[in-house]
Image (cartoon, rainbow, N blue to C red; front, side):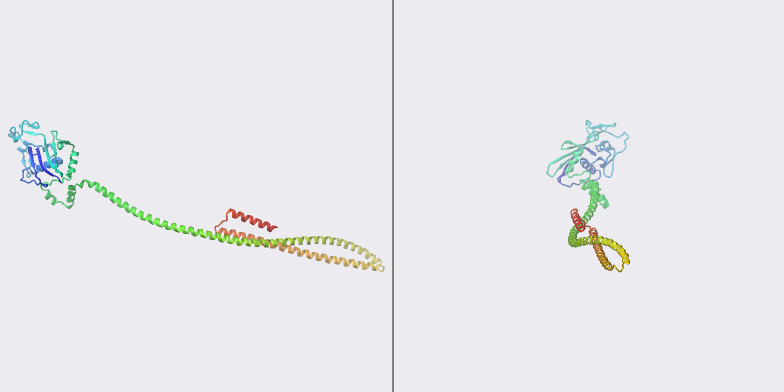
Length: 430
């Protein structure tokens, strides 16, 4: 921490000409004295050289800070020793060079009464930093009524001047380097809120209040957003766990569904195998029935041929019978004519009648055999229809069972089954 070694003033407020105020080696300096001794002006000089605005130095503009001898001669002092300007009537006594003002000073002005006042002033603070090096900070009031800043006799801007002070932790806005008369009592009477504001002002944190409030709002929004994101993250994690559980269930379901499908396919193949065996057995049985039917048909054809031959024989016999009956009639007539002489003819007639009766009996037997063959043929045809109906019913039930189980044969299996079924049907038709 640095310290103020001395303060040089030139025509500043009540200090006419050049004055040097020494502060010694202390890091904390108190300015004490009776009213009117210049305590406040010394504090104003320190405030002025450290860049505080004139509005905080009990002045309306910078020109009011320049020494004015005429005002001091005619003014009254207030409780703090400050001059209060009084109106003049032009009869005040004036002397050239009074109070040590040089009449040849180019910075002096001549009023109608002959009083000369300076138009410029400056204050220079000699400061020793932590490294033990001295720095000269000087602030002047030019004849135009504006401030001029110098650091080590080098002209700088007000911003550069303030930045140099801030490097030494001298904060102009906080005014953390001066305690004016009455400040302690005023501070003691302040409310906690005002004390907090004063501490923030002295520490320099007050200028960051707006940024702090902004960052506080952003922090609250960020915390709220973080809470929302945390809830969202928890929800997402819950959803992830739920989705993972659903995935495991879906995988298990898919695996079990695949096992089920495989079991269904195996069961269907097993049923197809047995159905195929049943079809093969049925085909063999049908083939046997077909062979028997062929035999029966051949027998029927044979019997039909026999019947046709019998019919032909019957027709021939009928013709023979008719012819015989005609002959019999003729013979009977002849017999009637010669009954006594025709005994041999009667015997011949008896023989012919017996022969006709024998042919009639044979025709009746052939007719019975034909009817038996026809009945047998009808029974075989009926059995064939029953077998075909059973086969069609089994195929319908099999297709219905496959549709209910949601399993369809591939095109290759369907084609193999169609080929096999067509082959079986061709065999059955044979």
